[in-house]
Length: 429
Image (cartoon, rainbow, N blue to C red; front, side):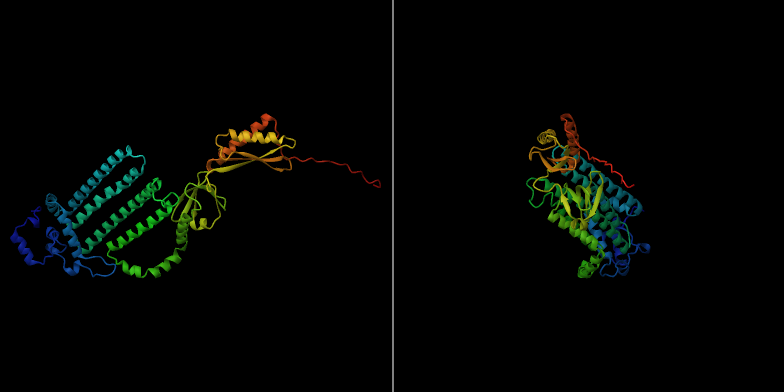
């Protein structure tokens, strides 16, 4: 009958099969027929490729893995799987569907936990971590179900080894992606804590992110080599030669990488600062990455600058210094003959009335020069952040013009007096 399996056979039948062909002790190989004719098992030479650096593991290792997977299953699960083993396609559909359902249940549980935690915590870090876990919660059961199908369905040794390695690699990089995102959230949470480690702060956060990414990617790469049976010792032995070749081929990328580390360590600016480069770009630093630094200008245009360039450029940090306050300078010219004391008082009152001009330091007015057409004054006032410079300058200029018109103070404009002189003609002509 199709549903009968070798596990349901009597002892005599199983003893006859054991006498007729060699047994490797694998219960799963008794469960499913081999790749040869009439259900014979492949020979050792066919199942196990020659071992060596970078070659796949053979059938004995896969059979040992099959035994382990099978022994972990409860008996009430083994019984239907024994029946489905005779129908590989149906087995694949059923097991993968069950794994998908388990993943969806895990995602639903994570959503419930997230909803309850949202009302109990003051930050969103836990919510973001749970969102990151949603994809692995679905991927992990599905990959495990495919592992189970691979362990049950009869396959040649090489094909089984390749399939297992591919599934393990997909699972590894899925976990790597989640780990990269989770590490970013974790470092942000540590940096925001008041009782955090002193060396983890907003300024040094990009450096720790870069280091964490490099370490996680290196560990994942090492794990991928082990999964595919590649001995990393030979790679490490030739790392010197490979390093020289990579250094020449990717010198620009490496220069940007090390420049990014030096920028974070030296801290000429940090995320949120307003900087002006020697090329004229001015904007807020929004990201310091492995390769580049990003500025967001006041026109909402993002400018990406390689770290190697910005590390060697002259940078004006408008947010640096003892505080983030930024001083605004408003040059003003009044006509000759104006009352200079009145002009100073008017400018000081205009600055004091503006709510965006801070009281400490107090605004001030200075007379700078005797211009060609005017007496040159300058009003100085501080705003809380460089981002307010444009709007506050606009408001101050309007207020000054209205106040001068109301008080009768003239704002001159350049003019020239042309004197015409008549020259008498020569009497001889």
